Length: 189
Length: 189
DNA sequence: AAAGAATGATGACAAAAGTCTACAATTTAA
DNA sequence: TTAAATTGTAGACTTTTGTCATCATTCTTT
Image (cartoon, rainbow over the protein chains, first blue to last red):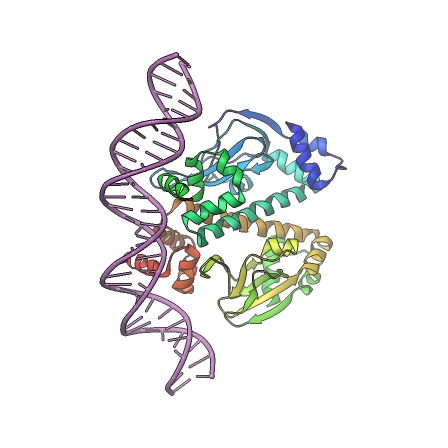
């Protein structure tokens, strides 16, 4: 499992990283079933997860306790509640697995040590941040500019794997559409 | 004008930055009227702007050529189209001033020099990225979890200055609500 | 293999949001 | 300072989206 992370780092920083094994040793492998809770709002987010395999859902509750999906993240990506992880304040979001997953978790201490002792890792962190931000930007633009139907089309165009891989319920929640409406709109295509 | 940026950096990095004047010298001051176009989609985004005074709108067009606002950014903040600025690819977003503004612009060359010669600035960049990302996360959550009316309430709670300072048309577009609907919902409060 | 739970589709209806028009009020630019 | 343009509000109407109930189907779990 750790080899997948090694590969992820190598493709971003090149092969000759002195302390790559030191870095890797700071990650703890976790095997999960589906629907395992990794973070609940109110708790402090203690880890950053690298997803070697599987899929995580980041979600929030509304007044009616419906679950609304802020992000769906698949393998070869990172997941955390950054604000809580960075500040130590309680998280406002929840995270769970939606598939049996293989994760590599690093805690705050490990993360900070890594950033200090392996300056290059700072670069990886920046890349992760930039990618996450870019993702958010596109996502916001779909919400301000597109109707429900067009958001569905957008997802099919831009993240076709998500559409086929995950349940309609999840996808609808990710798109900010009621699941019944999603079902109807899909039929229209 | 440059003093405002100096202050911005000092509060983030502390007073004893060796080369702060070198950094500041790389920024070009720009005075704008309102409604000045800083970037049009298709162009490459060549600058990062620090807003010393005023307000910028980042927006995209939909099929009907309506303008949809991805972000509204006021003084003491940064604005750019990061993906285009970073990659040199054509921008997918537009940027204009919505108020007469005082901006400090740095181009790619200046930016890269800065990151290399003043390693501390890298930290500022990271902070900007993190803040922008955090912002986006909250914003996405308002879209997946809240109705139009609740998004209005959210904005009044969390960014009350925006509400009073900018036109209803802009705010409606920022919230992803039709301007007529926005007018009606506001009356309901 | 079977019971139970979750999922996805559908119809009927309700509520929310969007469109269009008109008009007064305000702002902008000549 | 005025003419022109933009903005904000309102009513009547349409479309989109949400809700609820039902039912067949598929997954899960025992």
